[in-house]
Image 1 (cartoon, rainbow, N blue to C red):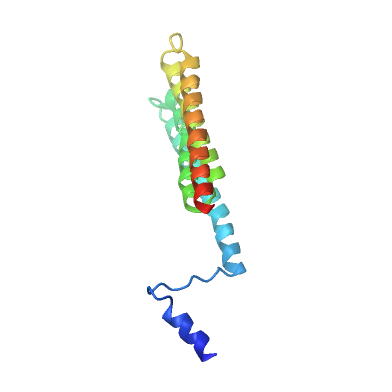
Image 2: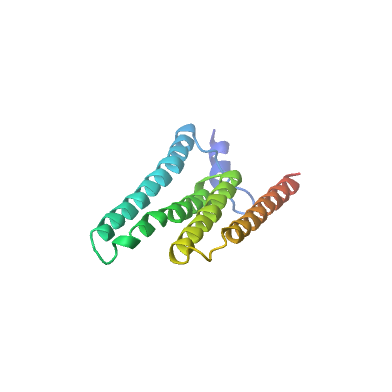
Length: 153
């Protein structure tokens, strides 16, 4: 018993301490935190954008542009989810959150351009750009996945 306590306190010859596995309640707490904090943050972003929309609709000068605040909620929530995905989630959800960010920004660009220049906007070009970014996202995900797999082998 004394030897186990000594080995645990001494660590390895290089001064590193052996890492203990997280207990099941800590893993559960981390998993819950990884779900609820991003969800509450997304709801908070939507609340702020909705409140801003309400305020802007009641000002006559800004009323025609009030919907932009709701439109901004899409990429804003995607940014929040992307940040949290790199903190708590796995690579598949990271790639999915980046994909949501790409497409929400593309959608917002199309809506804003078509609002100000309805006749001259070529929507296909914006969506082709989003598609190219999506392909790059998938390729980076596959590269990181294969790199991780080769390191573990």
